[in-house]
Length: 62
Image (cartoon, rainbow, N blue to C red; front, side, top):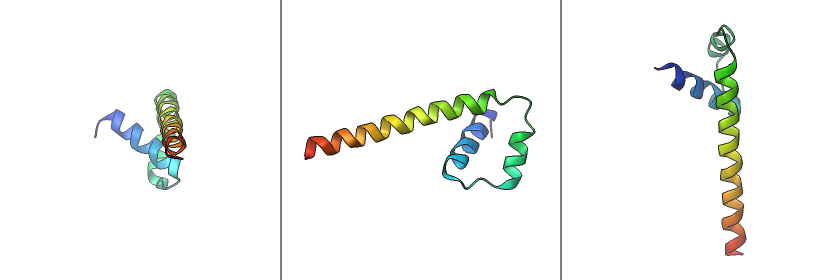
């Protein structure tokens, strides 16, 4: 698995709270936290936009 996919998988797992302890320890052993921070910010933005879109659809149908 490429490094980018590992970071994305780790951040998604952490967002929903199901990350394994082994994976958590691997993440903390990384040299830099920057990829995790960037991935977290991007995924947070995607989540907020998705929620906003659902709300907009619900308001249009009401």
